[in-house]
Length: 89
Image (cartoon, rainbow, N blue to C red):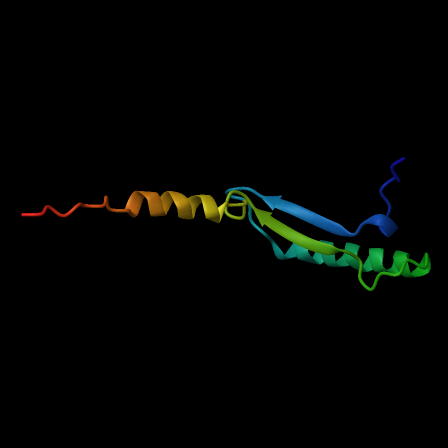
């Protein structure tokens, strides 16, 4: 059964930023205040956590996963020159 969301069971927050979204200082101040509240609640409830939670900002599409191995293979295939056989004269 899932626990209800409370300050003692928040361990990470992820905010997804889309094109045109801005990150304002007030957002960080709000996250810091919430993080402080979580830390205090966890301390009172004897949760063994040294901080409130981890915060991650994810910019879409800039931070989306890119499979570098696939790109590398495609790049290598497009830059290869065909083998030329020598003509014996």
